[in-house]
Length: 400
Image 1: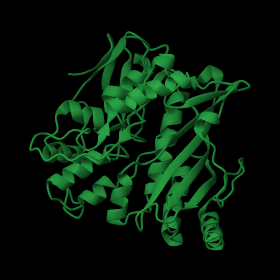
Image 2 (image 1 turned 90 degrees about the horizontal axis):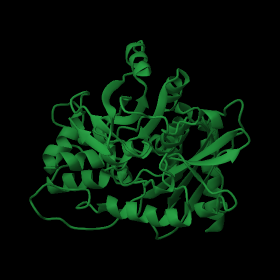
Image 3 (image 1 turned 90 degrees about the vertical axis):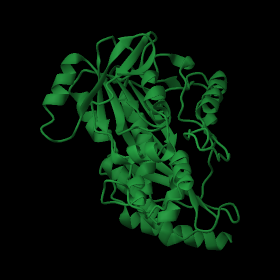
Image 4 (image 1 turned 120 degrees about the vertical axis):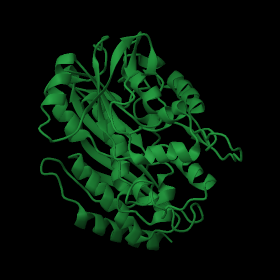
């Protein structure tokens, strides 16, 4: 088995090396055979992680959630918890982790390095993988993987430097793995960072035939005097929303429950569109790095929230100083058809939708009034942005 795995890894490394374009000013290596992986809690014992959140150790990250199996045969509206994901349990776990590792809670972890911070983040793509297995669409899931980490670390103003991947399966199918890694390479190119290395793990009998799991790890850098941390946010500041491509990489446990309850196939057409449900749901996550860094360079950006698990309701408050909240203008952007279908087919309440999905806005920037006018008036068609709300006194997120 060792010889077989080594040979398969060597072939996969050759494929990755052939598809990867090295960045001129940074070293790059192809995905390597297995090497030692250390738990993330050992990253820094002498230097506790610094939080991007102005609320420090009391800030709660809802990107860590517990998934569990649960049946729901009722005819009422579905919830994320019905689908097996308990956001509140995830929040409780983060509270407990924060007691052991103070500083947890921001979108990325900051590590001091001279006059800069290294900013690190890690994530996966959740049960969107199940749809990849069912649809056979493996070419773009790697883009999702990169997006989930680089979009997190750019919220601090950090430019991504490099990315590492972890690919695990019971039996290594080199051709399938090559498709996945090619997507990772594409994602790295979109975010202008280097695929520096990775882990390919073959674990017989651990995964179902033809299935695999993915994790990604990104590291970026930002000058200490340029960190975007939300501490200067005040009432009257404007929320600018950048559109998503669809569901991105969160909420798929609930999506799959909606499909199952309605007896639908991923080959069925998404109502009101010319694409199938599978095509709409597998649309790759938007990588916002270049757009966000460009907007930051023009000034006036005070805080940034990546809208992932927890939706608007839980993610936007993570960047606010204590005592501030947000009002969201519900009809200020066009909600993609896929969300309208999910809500109608699943009979899902508005509040549940807003705490589970991005609803068509994948990144929110909190900016000054002056900056908002510049962003909205001077895009020159390069990208789309919406004024979706404003900062108010009083905590939480309300919808008007």
